[in-house]
Image 1 (cartoon, rainbow, N blue to C red):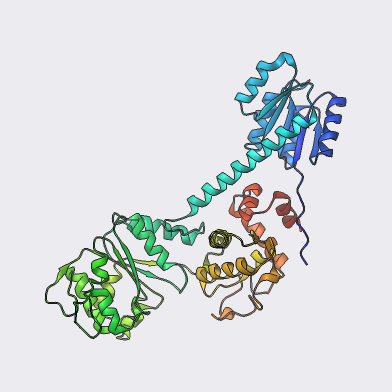
Image 2 (cartoon, rainbow, N blue to C red):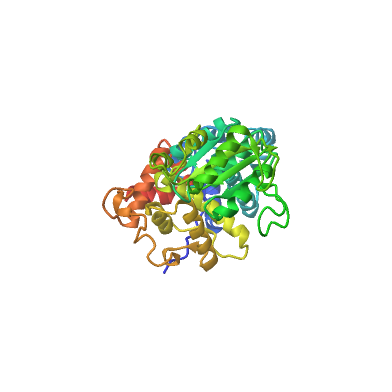
Length: 456
C-alpha cells in the first residue's frame, strides 16, 4: 500500500534585527504553513543559505550589520531567482524601489498585516515555480530532436548531430538498429530538417506488403495492368516526388524488386506496371533495417550494388539499454502523449520505485515497448502516481531478448530497488558536475529526497 505524498512546507528565511518583531512574525508565518528560519543579520543569512534549501527570502532593508539590498543580491548569487520580499519603514521607499529594480519580488511598508505578507509570499513562490517549469520545458525542447525524439545521452547526442549534418545531403541514408529504436522517427526528422521539408514524406513497410502488391505500391500501375487494377496508380515514388520516400525493413525486399529499386536510384525514373513510358522522379531514398545487410550481401540474399547505393551514409540508432539516462525523458514524453489521447486518465507521474524498475529493465522492444507500456499504465491505473502494483505481472523478471547475455546496468548482482535508486542518484549528481540542485531537478525529486538517498 502506497502512503499519501507529504506536503512540503516552503522554507522562508526571515532577516530582521528587531528580535520581538522578527520572532513574532516568524511564529505567525509558521502557523500559516511555512517553515521559518529567523536570523538577525546578513552574515547569518548567507551562512544559512549555504547550508539549507531556502525557498524565499524576507528581509528588512535596514540592518545593523549589512543592508537588505546587498543581502538580496548576494543571496540570489547563491540561489538564482530566489524570491525576495523586502520590508521597509515609511522613510525608505526610494530604497525599496531600488530593491525592486535589483530583483526583489515586492516590498511591504511597516507595519503590515501578516496576511498581506503571506499573500505575496505565495505569489512569489508560484512565480518561481512557473519560472522553473518554463525553464524545464525549454530544456526538454532543447533536448528534443526534430520529429519528437528526445535524449541527452552521449549516444543520442551523436545521432542528433549526425541528423543535423546529413539532413540536407541529397543522398540515400541507411538507418540501422534494433526493432523499436525509432528509425521511422529519425527518418521523419531527416526529412523535416532537409530542404525537402515542404514536399511529401512517404513511408512504406516493405515487410508488411505482399511481394506481388509491393511493386505496384512503389512504382504504380496502369488501368487494367493486372486483375483488379480498375484504376491507374502513380505509385509511392511518384507520390514522394521532390520529397522523401522511407523504405522500412528494406532487408525484406525480394531480389526482383531489389533490381528495380536499383534502376530507379541510378536513373531517377520509374515505369508503372503495364506502362510504356517512364516518368522522371526526384525522390530522396531513406531506408531502414534491423538486419545485418552486409552479412546478407555475403550470403547472396541482398544485392551488393544496391547495398552500396543505400549505405552511402549509415546511421545506427542505439538500443534503449545503451541510453538508459534517456529513460526518464522518454517516460515523461510518453506520459504526456498518452494523457493527450486519454484526457480523463488518472495517472500524472511515475513513482520512484517504478522508475527504478524501468532503469533496471533491458527493454528488448526499445522505445516502442516503453511507449506501449506507458499507454497501458495510463489506461489501467487508478492511482495519481503509477506504483509497482500497476506494472504487468512478471515485468522485469523475464527478458525475451536474452537478458542473461548482458550484465545488469549496476553490475552483475540483482540489487534491491532502493540500492538502484541510490546508485542512480549518485550517477545523476556526477553527471551534473556535482550540482545537487540540477541533479534533483533532472530526477524529478526535491533536494531533500536526493540528499536522503545520497546519505543512505
